[in-house]
Length: 135
Image (cartoon, rainbow, N blue to C red):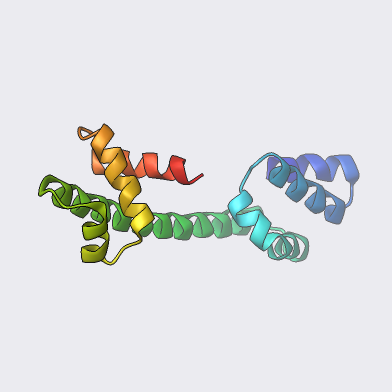
């Protein structure tokens, strides 16, 4: 919103300000998860009915929904990590665990490898490590 206001003063044109603001944010990694897939909708909304309160409410709603989705994914992955941990302590191989849990063998091997090297880590710490390995 600050960039939009800045560019409105600089360009005088709302359309140019909106385009420049969206480009700036994407280029600087700001709200890219929303702006990249929905840039046309965001630009349209800003151009047709610019109302800072409405825009902020919409952005908050999108961020909350994204957070819910990420939370569900994280919770599911932490449950898998917990189950893998239990199976590993019972001496099960990654292949056996993958078959029992009906999960991808590569994921299970990665979890087993992390647990082997860091058995003291919590499930959430293992999950964070998995995310960095996947990137």
